[in-house]
Image (cartoon, rainbow, N blue to C red; front, side, top):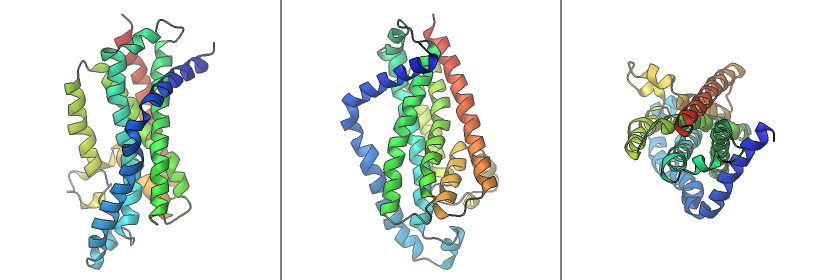
Length: 262
């Protein structure tokens, strides 16, 4: 059997497991985008837009909802990636040890690791697609290129899924996973340009924000949704996110191998 086919079998295994649990993710997949856009984009956005001309000018001349929505799209992709790459991976390695059982089949460590990452990418695509629909429904899209923001968001999520899965495979318990969310994912969510321009941060902190994958994903999705994307900017963001995805995937395979092969 070809390696690609074996990888797909590992992905299919995760999909079959999700088919039994999908009801528990309906709220986060469907309602969360709608509630976030309504509360932050429409509710808070109405207050921001009523302010002086300064706030709107700092947002590129658009309303807060149009500014916020594509940022939330990228941030939601990151959160989905982190959630899917933390506890399900730890479950398969340590708690239920399903990955060890899969090694008793013709599947290799690389098949298991890449199959899990492929499934996480599918989950990111599902969540991001709902978010794009919500953005269009709220009238927050300013360009037909919003459709290209969907693969951009998926790539953003993949750039997080791979290294987070590698880190999860390196940890021995849930405390490290909680710290990852508390000191990694949440600060990125707040300070990577999702809710306000990076230019509003202190000058000493801005370079840190600019090198985060989330800022590249947010800026990429935002430029596409608002219709001012340039070839050079898109190429830079995509290249940066692809490097994170490829390097993270290679590291994930290595960490899975160290953890599963005894």
